[in-house]
Length: 232
Ligand code: ADP
Ligand code: MG
Image 1 (cartoon, helix red, strand yellow):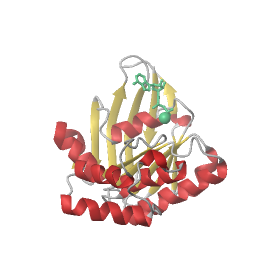
Image 2 (cartoon, protein in one colour; image 1 turned 135 degrees about the vertical axis):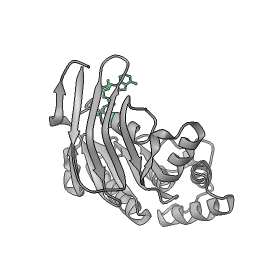
Image 3 (cartoon, helix red, strand yellow; image 1 turned 30 degrees about the horizontal axis):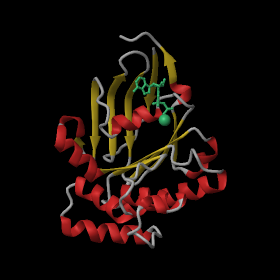
Image 4 (cartoon, protein in one colour; image 1 turned 180 degrees about the vertical axis):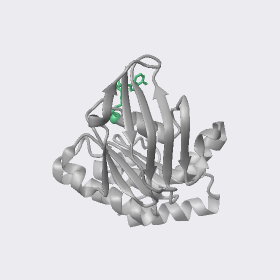
């Protein structure tokens, strides 16, 4: 069994993990003694493919549950929330950007962003104005066209808008540049960083691309920390 051990200490209330253990049913396991991400901090979670980056993001997002440990988002013990409460908390406090965007096809940019705000429990009156202003800020002019009619670059902007429109505590971006050439990768990273900063969110970006290292406040390299151990 592989164990990725990460031990980073600072003084944050943004995102905080302590003593987090997780294992897939057979195989990979991850142990995070301590990880703190400051409000507004921007970090790169770097490491080779298969090193556990996506798994760690899924734990922070409450998509996977650790067997031990505590995860706090904006001071709340997120894992104590169950079902719809956890979904609403996630929608309100965590923005997610996926490599393939995961936009709802057949719906407009505006509808995609408004739906995310609805899931985060924002008032219906608030949903439209927040969605419109965020899309405008991110340069989406035709927010009423179905998302599949937009260019790939525009779709990524919609995905970023959806992640930041609710001013979350943290934005998680999983390999957002993996399918882009170097020039577009740099632009996409700057777009995501600016959007997270404007939203007042901490940012955790995963990538296996070492050329992104210079763009971040802090690099958490998961690879060299991997140790091989028997599961307990
Ligand atoms: P990365 O994002 O760094 O490429 P992942 O977190 O996706 O790494 O995967 C880490 C390890 O966990 C890999 O060995 C992968 O095969 C394994 N893994 C990922 N998802 C699952 C799953 N749902 N069930 C079992 N093993 C998984
Ligand atoms: Mg991954």
